[in-house]
Amino acid sequence: MRLKAKSIISVSAAATLACVSWYLLGGQGASQHGPSSLSNGKESAELEVDDQTAAGSLRRLVNGRRIFRHDTFGSEDFWGGTLRLHETIKGEKLGGLGPGLSPATALALGLKVDVTALPIKLRKAIKNELVDLDDPAITVALLQLDAVVGVKGFFDDQSDLSAVGIQCSLCHSVVDDSFAPGIGRRLDGWANRDLDVGKIIAFAPNLSPFAELLQTDEETVRAVLNTWGPGKFDAELLMDGKAMRPDGKPAATLIPPAFGLSGISTHTWTGWGGVGHWNAFVANLEMRGKGTFYDPRLNDIDKFPIATMHNFFDVRETPDLITSKLPDLHFYQLALTPPKPRGGFNPAAAARGKIIFEEKADCARCHVPPLYVEPGWPMHTPEAIGIDSFQAERSPEDRYRTAPLRGLWTHTKGGFYHDGRFSTLLEVVEHYNSFFGLNLTEQEKLDLIEFLKSL
Picture 1 (cartoon, rainbow, N blue to C red):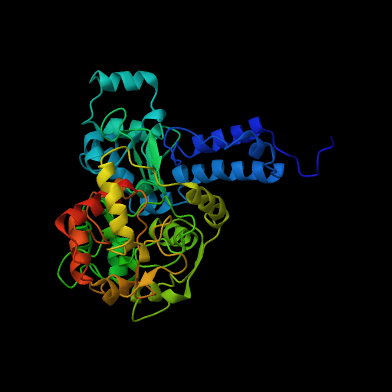
Picture 2: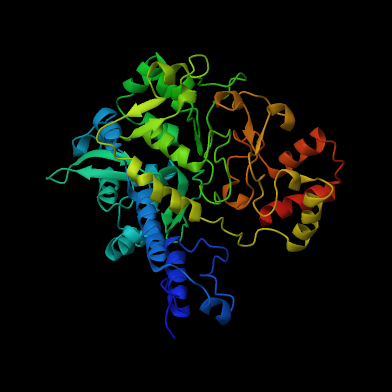
């Protein structure tokens, strides 16, 4: 029997590809226990895949994961060369400034450590409490091992920390705490709701670039950064200069997860665009990498005065260290599936809650299964969902996105909605029950919550 031009991958080859793909995604597929098995031998035998396409997809997954976890896009020139963050990390005893950043303090700020990057001897020493976690020199050593998730240290010929850069995984990866709290295997795509981004930035000795953009002084910038709190970041601050909401609370919003994005058109709280757009926006304007970015919507002096005055709507840097990496980064992110819950909910109550979700409460009207967000353009006016318009008006669309619900259990810390205004799921349900006049009973509310926890 002659093979067609497009080779038929054997069952074993297809299974191997599935296994490797599952491994690359950190076991974050649908089952959480391993790669899904092929449905049956006949279907497997009939699976026709262009070898080049299959190999190319695998390469893109590998490269995309590397970019997501390890690429700084040249941001070390800003965080190290300009802000000099590395100086306060290593501290005065190591030639820097101040007391330094100890591992204990770093973990308290929500930074995570990849246990797979630690040598076995070091793991044993930590377990036996032979490592001083209050010593900034250990933090520097961890950076040299490339073990700090989302932060890369750069060292000179004398192994002296000379700069630091940041990576996508800083905000959008956590660890499974399998070794110790804050130390474990990476979980890509999970929102790091422990991370106090503001305090980490405020730790830098030079905040003058932010002060100049915001037309204020460094101490005011530092004070604003320290108000953000764990799990929050203000991506619009350097676009519109609005540090506080009208009610006096910080304008920072919760870090969203970066999994479950496939099939969804908008990937931010207020619908700036898909993850491809947001990757370019963040890599250039927030991470301060070196690349190209174009979005004429930012050329609006009334809505985005800072972005307009500093031409953030049209960025062109040479060499471009970002643009060539965006396709594979995007590919990897779209492959990150929401992890299924590992218990933590009542199955019987969740089954009842599913009926409430789809029928009486009509939640499925906007959170359409199985995406649990509207296919198409899932955007709503503030009036349509019964909240204020402040954050919506900081975006080009003046609307809020319907939040996808799959994997909700992984990012309940810090509250719900874009700014965490509802501290519990019950508060969310109570809001909609009142706003839409759903007349849910107390038991129905509780059952609905169990269903949300089961997604």
